[in-house]
Length: 185
Image 1 (spheres, helix red, strand yellow):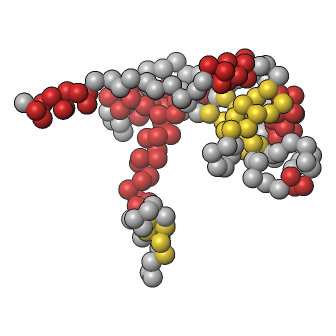
Image 2 (image 1 turned 90 degrees about the vertical axis):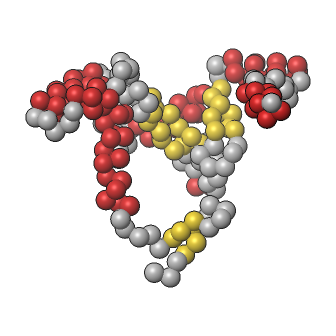
């Protein structure tokens, strides 16, 4: 009976404890509504970085203009790619390479959306090495793949490759603290 009481008490939602004063909440709200700034987590560490939107956009454009890494498209291609993936998965299901259930899973239920590009500022880099020294830090480019047309297919490919990759013995094993420790292999 007493154990039951403790278990049920533990399942009840905990009351939220607010750790911000009214003035801090107001300041945070004002920052979030300010369209002249961008707020992002730093690339490394746990810092939050507040940046000038114009400079942030300039850094994004600087990177996107690099034709070694990016190709400009006239229009989004995710719907065309989604159709191609659907055709491939349909063919695989018809050939019994995958089951109909696997096909449904790999296609997903969400309507695909275009990927989002954003930057995480590399404030850990020395300011004299920034693209504009001491002006604005370089950004780590991120292309969000959430709910994109190939998200589930990519996860499936990772899972398919995981068993063969796991057969290789790593010379590093995590210690009790989660840090790698060198083995004498």
